[in-house]
Each structure stands twice: as C-alpha cells, then as structure tokens.
Length: 374
Image 1 (cartoon, rainbow, N blue to C red):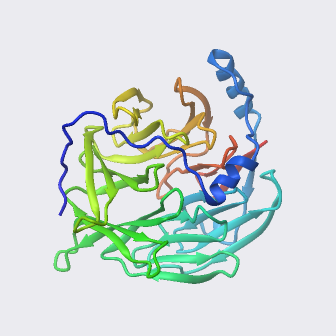
Image 2: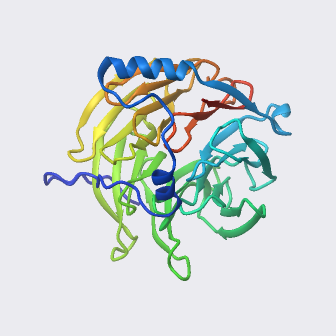
Image 3: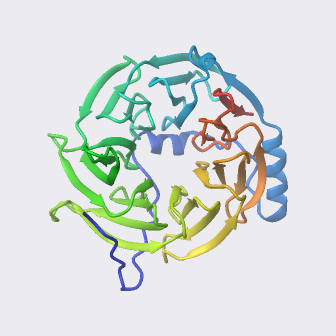
C-alpha cells in the first residue's frame, strides 16, 4: 500500500507540454473555436457574458429519460462529433452530430446492460471517435460505438469506479474499490494502469493507497497521473516499469482540508484546477506546484470541473442547489450560470465542453441531456 511521500528537492512540476497525437490533434488543428473573439481584460469578460447568454438550448431525448433515470457521466469524443453519456439504468448512450452545429443531431446509439452496476465513468480513446471505455462495478470494458459490441474486457481487482485514457492513448487507467468480504465495507482504493500499445495489453502499474481516491487525471505528458485523495492531498505519480509496482511517487502536496472531488488540466498544461468538498476551487501552477488563485464559489461541495478546449473557460458543478457556473479562467470572473444544471435527489450536476468550442452539454435537474449551442 502506498503512502504519500513529499519530495523535498525544488522544482519538479508536472510537464506543461500540450496534448498531441491522434484524433485529439486533428480536432485541435481542424476545429474552429466557437465563442467570443479573443480579447483581454474587462472587455473580454463582457463579451463572454454576452456570448454565453446568447446560446440556444436543446434537449436530446432518448427512450430512457422518460424513466427519470439520472445521468452519471458525460464525455465528448475527441473530434467533438459525438457525445456519450451514461444512465443509472446501466445503459451507455451516444449521440451523433452530422455537422459542426450542435443542433445537427443525426443518430442515437444505445448499449444496454453494459455492466453489473450503473456506468459511473466513461473515457474515449483519444485517437478515434469509435472506441470508448466504461466501468460499472465489475470489469473494465471497451466498446465499439459503430457496432455497439464489446471489443475488450479487463478483469480488475475490486469494484471499478473511475476510468481514463492518457492524453495520447498509450495508457488506460482505472480506479477501483477493494471491499472486505465479511463487513462489506470499502478497505482501500486501487489504481490499475494498462499499456494499450503493448502486444499483450499488459498491466504496467498497480497499487493500493492509504486514502480513498475521489478524482484523478492524466497530465499532458502522457506518463504522469494525478490522484485526488480523501484527506485533501494531491499525489503526482509517474509510470515507471522498473519499479516493482510500476508507479513512482513523484510529489504530494496538500491542496485542501477536505477531499478532492474534481480536477482538470488546462489544454496548455500550465494549470491544474482542483475542486474540493468544502466548495473551493483552486488554481495551481504546474511549473512550481504552487497555488496561484483560490476562489470560494458557493458553500457547497464542488462535484465536477471541466475546461473548454481553448483553455479560456472553466465550469464548476456543485452538490446542492447551486447552479453550475462558468468562469473566465485567468481572472475567474463569472460569465454564466447554467440555471437548471443543479444537483437534486440522485442527479449530480455535470457538464462537458465540446472540444475547442465554448459550447457544451449538461445534465438537467430531471435527468435530461441538454445542449447549449450557437
């Protein structure tokens, strides 16, 4: 079991190299940015407020939203032509869009009973818009959206809860909960990393941790993974196959007095945005691993964070009745409130920006998928 070793030497931040390769790179080079024109200062914030207020909203209907089955996760494909989401009914749903506009909805894919439990986490292969990984209590599974077939399945220790490809798709990682058979209680959280480029798709890193993991994200260097723990610490680990467990503990720092619920890197890799249970969003420099801004948004837990593909806006979702807020990243000035994107009952608010565009999909209070588009 791994503890948290703080590195005492100076420097050593997370690499700030931007993501490249595969479909993600194609999206970055080919997709035009939709949003207010680039500007600085108060004028830019005013333009951003006007832009977000002008967005249109549409509802994507599916056969299961009438059952009031809450949406658990939302992810856009690398090129932004598909949005995947999961429902509490154990279904995986994917919407196709025929054009650049978000109102060009053309097709719905539905794969039912994907896992033993509801799908709590999704991750697209960054190199294509066909392959997606899911977890839902049992094994880690990979699906082909075109054929709606299971293509791979990996046995994982414990109950799977989170999944993520690395930025260029070399690694696929999973967080699971190890359960005591007698008491039924969670004993520890476990990380598994699979090398998707190896011939035998081997597990190259595997470790259990002293504290529970509520969020994790890959750094833009494609080989470092950042874990958010229940004690408010953030740990940076690097895949190193020369070590027994394949995981090098690079650095650990205290980011909050409460658990880390959400994290995201900006596209340039300069900042790590962290959301905590105490309702604080903090911005950390990856070069110095120092906090450069802390914002107490509302008196509710931050449950999800997403950053627009151009790196200009950050959205924060909350646990209670507060609506999701969109902020200009550099000043953290509020630009927009998504008024019906609130947590209520079993529905936890969630939001996902569409590639480099400042348009997005979000969950509504009544379990519907909403799209905001120009």
